[in-house]
Image 1 (cartoon, rainbow, N blue to C red):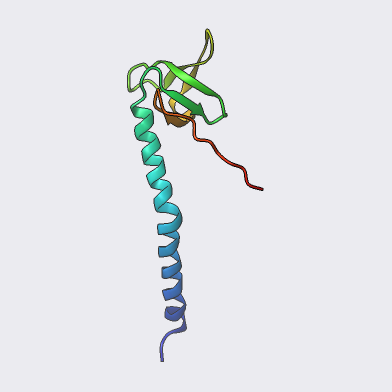
Image 2: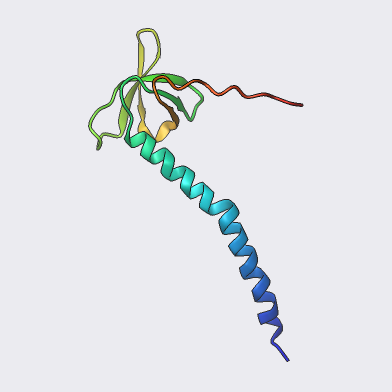
Amino acid sequence: MQDPMFNMLIPMIGILGIFYFIVWRPQQQQVKKLREAVEGLRRGDTVILNSGIVGKIAKVPAKDDPEISVEIADNVTVRVLRAAVGEVRAKNQPVEAKTDNK
């Protein structure tokens, strides 16, 4: 006769495996892609900050400096942390149109 704990352990391992491939792994890949994009920021790139503010990179200091300058309006430049960048778009990348089907 098999141990009941062993019979319960096999489905739990399967669930954890499925959870890894559906949730954790794609999230790790997305974070890695964003980190590489933030490290490769150039002047003129459009960024969307985690607060929802859209702006263009005005000045990118050295790689080890945690702050960047973002122009959010004409002659309005703010300094933000690199960690506050939520999305990076290239200079000429168009904005994706999202449709709201309710």
